Length: 165
Image (cartoon, rainbow, N blue to C red; front, side):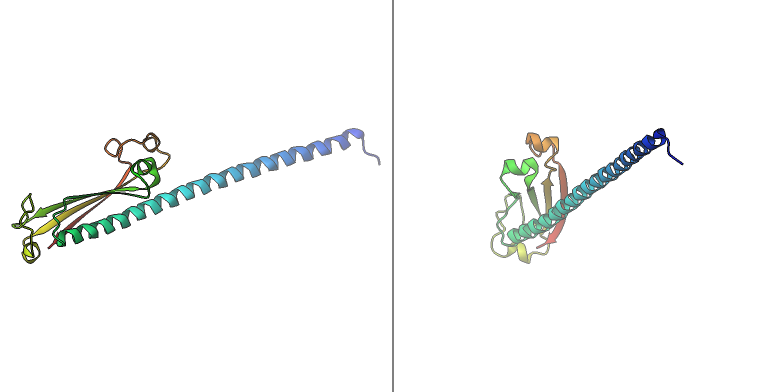
């Protein structure tokens, strides 16, 4: 039995349609995998930046306690980590603000009588340390424009510590 020419020409067309269909499915799966991979990278980066902010807050809190026990009467600390001020505003690092407030009989607003061991030996002296670590996503509009922290703080990690001297 011989095949008609019409049956012979339809078979390659069916193979072509099947190949296009398989390529479309593989392209869709590939796009889904790339999208998922990008989200995972972004989530990992966000988690890393948050953990770094927590560690910087802990470090600067301990540094503030060191300054208070050294009786330097420091009230505020500011630092840019990972670049200059403009680079940090653009999302390439961290900005740290530490505020130290003294409470007790030996710590007036001028801190003049924190000389010698008075502040350390008096159990009524307490310091409150507020540590703020700011960081931004480099692709955020505030980072691209280089806005100041007061206009758009980005992500902020806050740590409050109460320490008796």
